[in-house]
Image (cartoon, rainbow, N blue to C red; front, side, top):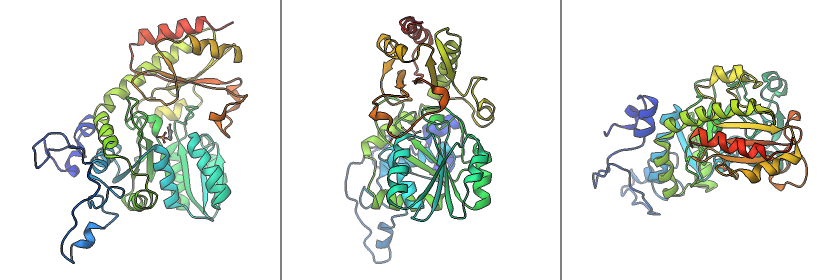
Length: 404
Ligand SMILES: *Cc1c(COP(=O)(O)O)cnc(C)c1O
């Protein structure tokens, strides 16, 4: 197989995950892309062609790897093909990709509307830096209600940012409905789709201009690298490529790009199993007498289940649940887990849990306060790919340690 990118991107989803950005190396005939570690590239030698070597917006013009390097480009073709976007720019982390996009697209005096519940690093960036120090007007709203987005619109609203499903709450926002609002006012509409694992929802089809992913999560999937991507309109991606890579310098390393390329090939297959395991675990938890509430977009009881059903082809691997015992229950539960690991991050092969306490000294939670119904805290559960019987047995024995 050595189809050009424009051909591979017309193929089916599983095929795109394997073939977009992949190809036979012209020099060695290796059927895997090599890792190119060179930190300099030979330039064009004529006065007509030399400027092409320094066209920062051309993703295939390599000169210095902070601006672009081959492994980043292969990964960008893979992700653009999988997400169905015109182009993609990858960065050193999810936060680097998203903050790089905001830096590029927003100036002081512009107004930004964002999900009130969004990834804590992005929330901190927007509140502490953009709003407090750089004069970007910021309105945080509950984007699960499109009417709140509409009500927040100002004449200078430049960008609307939505995270769905949201981290950590799994709350779902209606992408198509918010796209209509953004289009009407000519604002750029960005969606952080990390929790969808890239294959379970397609925000660009629903009207988003740009989709953002922390590649650290499902795309990597194996718990061993950091990365981020912005995918969508070519004109916007070119601007972000210049600012985020050339000017801000948050470039992904060639080795990391190669690792992400490797793991993304199995993403559609892995996501199916994450979804299946999460659904079974959510139902198991919902039926458990010590569990106070479960939130999973695939459950009928999820507040936005109807929207999730409409805009997602699978509900992902992320679950929230609370314990009836409240504060006295969480630490015995966490301490008793044997297969499941108490650690940050998500989307790994192995199941991970993180406790989100509602009060006390928890520097990891920063300035965020999570919704009312969470009461005395909750567990964010990232359903892994282990045998489902081992996961339910581990949960059952750990829940046995929770006082009534
Ligand atoms: C983890 C995460 C990010 C940040 O990504 P990093 O790779 O950790 O920088 C952004 N958005 C969401 C929804 C995330 O889960």
